[in-house]
Length: 278
Image (cartoon, rainbow, N blue to C red; front, side):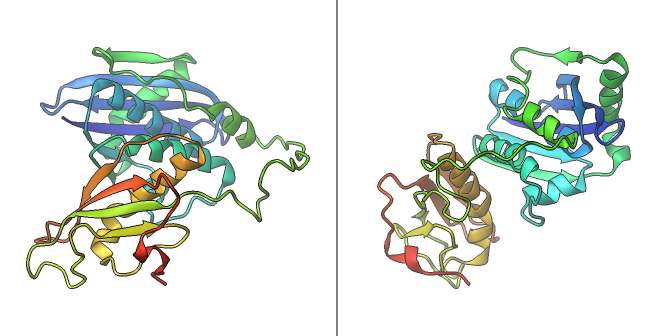
């Protein structure tokens, strides 16, 4: 089942009172959730990401396997598609939460739209801001967020520009210059490309390993198809999350190759794991 999701977030002041607006529609175009959620004090960017995370939580609970996302935050959309980096350390937690939710769907896509095309979600944001509380206009079954994003409170506090005292170093934890080693993410070719469909021509059964670098010998279309899922797997590994293997299909028209993506259990790398793309 594919759900169509519109999200918006806004703050009156930056930071200031903030809210998230969410609209989720079923394949027939009927609304299953229309709500504005009051977030307290936050920045515009925190509100935008919080709206997305809450909408994805609701979609998971409703049993969606595919989602089409629409948002008027060009920054958020381009960060999720890999065009922009998430430079703000305080925003990275919300970005990672979104990635960990997106990996639960067999496929997803996100599109930047103009504010005028997102008017209904914007109206819900303002209704929640005016009321100073959550406003739920439509809610069917389990179509509601599980909760606010896990680190939202910490992110909101940080966004209010209150400086936090530095923590003393913990010798039991790896330093920033020595990050914890993560197991590689393995990408296995479960269906090879059609004849003449790919110059790289990966063989069925062949595996590639993504560590800190991308593997060579994967075509750019296959890399693009796998990239978001690989990142989400690595974020999950850093949080000690357990994820089931995910299948993706090469994005090149006429190729037909399919790949299974999973986290390595042993930490060992296949023969192609040492190759570097750059």
